[in-house]
Image (tube, rainbow, N blue to C red; front, top):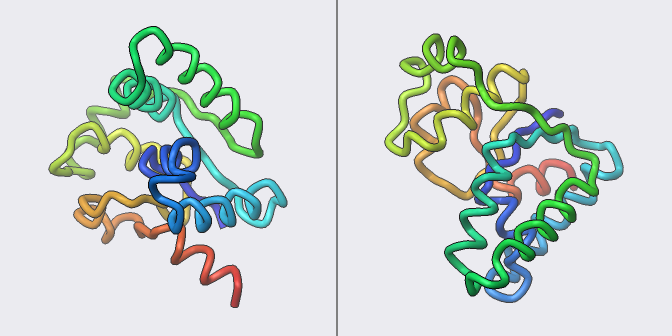
Length: 148
């Protein structure tokens, strides 16, 4: 199975140990499966940008660049495929097909599609708008499926 990890999942993994303990445990289980190569995972450069913004919004200004750097380092120290930004042509071709209320997540959906992912793993419910094009699952749903 090949999945695209949305930033909502990455942020739980990187920053949710205490605030989102139940979700954090499930995401860690998923990451263990990724590192054991039971699941292939893709993240994009868009996610790295969003992690930096999360750090700017949630940490004191003097610490946020360091926290972001350490978070990205932790993230990339796993068995994840990192893919680039969409080209202008890809944005034009797929933009209408992947119409979503939150335009910032449209790029994630297009990349997941172009990378031939079997699902987007996310906690953002607005991805259901494109579920007919690409299944959208939570980490819990994937972990449950793996444990069967």
